[in-house]
Image (cartoon, rainbow, N blue to C red; front, side, top):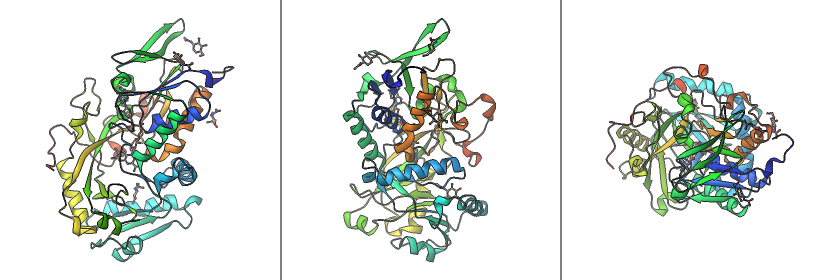
Length: 430
Ligand SMILES: Cc1cc2nc3c(=O)[nH]c(=O)nc-3n(C[C@H](O)[C@H](O)[C@H](O)COP(=O)(O)OP(=O)(O)OC[C@H]3O[C@@H](n4cnc5c(N)ncnc54)[C@H](O)[C@@H]3O)c2cc1C
Ligand SMILES: *[C@@H]1O[C@H](CO)[C@@H](O)[C@H](O)[C@H]1NC(C)=O
Ligand SMILES: *[C@@H]1O[C@H](CO)[C@@H](O)[C@H](O)[C@H]1NC(C)=O
Ligand SMILES: *[C@@H]1O[C@H](CO)[C@@H](O)[C@H](O)[C@H]1NC(C)=O
Ligand SMILES: *[C@@H]1O[C@H](CO)[C@@H](O)[C@H](O)[C@H]1NC(C)=O
């Protein structure tokens, strides 16, 4: 808004997940005095949010140095800012393939390390892992064979307790005067547009009960974004991975204190046991499952009801049990609990979308396309949104609303794994 104090405009943010909370917090800190958040769940962190989880990996190695630089900045805040510091655990990140992985999967690591080693942030942080002896050096608590594991260990990485960090940001937002409307009053069913002489503008959002008006409307609905902005089309595909826990006793958890985040790329990844609950979290990260079947507009969307996402695909259990036999065989037969699907908003190039919706005269902003790697940016994501609000446009090309020529027909996630529909898939009976 040239010539106008932006902090005087009324802001409405829809969705109190990772991107929405980060945005509300940054704007409130910058003096925006009238920020309202609408969230469909009646608690924050929302049970629908991908960030409502025990932990998420925080690491800076990306093949694209644009994200490396941002992640390094985010990690500095995770380490030093009193709001984030209590929720960040710098355990290191062990990224390997097991002995049984296909040769092509193993070969990727050499190219990958070559592409990131040049970055000054990583000087002295990486060690190569070649077999069980190297694994034992960085994770002496691993009791299984871990034979033939190859990959690397990155010291400057770890995890964030994503539910706790989200809650901390939420509570700080409340202190800073952000208004929250939760539950059915905050469950947005449509956007309100007005016709002006020069064209259409978005002037608010409506729930079943009420209409909320604002100068700027910011959609931060994660994988659900196309419910309100169907014109986003195939730019964003809702996908999910299955997440489960196993319960450890306090002494079992104590023995694993400080283990690195461990990603065995062909099997699954896991974290240090949660400090509050002693739960170990596992996720088999394949291509990400889709749900095209239940949508009306040909787009893949998360299930609308929470109960429908309370399972994991049958194959995931086999990967997790194989991993346990390799690394912690004493837990190989322990029941898997808390099974659920975690939904993210995937884009073809894995770039976020942070931009004005075309044809709305800069009244409507969409934050989406996290592509499964957005949580680590929590401490700095709000800066990205503040910049476009105050600049009036997105100057960073890779975060723009994608023109349809960049969307390849029939592409799959990162082009590396075939994607599978959820509907009709065998489910693990837990
Ligand atoms: C299994 C899994 C593992 C991941 N691991 C990592 C990792 O290791 N590192 C990392 O950096 N990132 C990771 N991510 C990604 C990270 O969780 C996301 O990037 C991040 O949560 C995206 O934030 P968001 O705000 O866009 O979406 P979300 O956090 O999903 O929030 C969307 C919010 O919108 C609300 N909402 C939806 N519709 C409406 C409506 N109609 N009205 C009101 N509110 C609505 C929802 O209730 C929710 O609160 C992972 C994701 C998954 C699924
Ligand atoms: C914030 O904006 C809303 C919508 O324009 C308005 O109704 C409300 O009075 C404003 N609140 C303050 C404190 O100005
Ligand atoms: C793990 O390493 C592989 C290469 O071996 C790389 O492609 C992948 O992106 C890495 N994963 C993470 C989360 O950094
Ligand atoms: C577009 O926004 C500008 C600045 O906020 C405003 O001056 C102009 O009248 C708007 N145009 C329409 C069509 O609403
Ligand atoms: C505007 O865009 C430029 C270039 O991307 C950026 O450096 C700047 O921080 C942005 N924000 C503002 C408020 O100017």
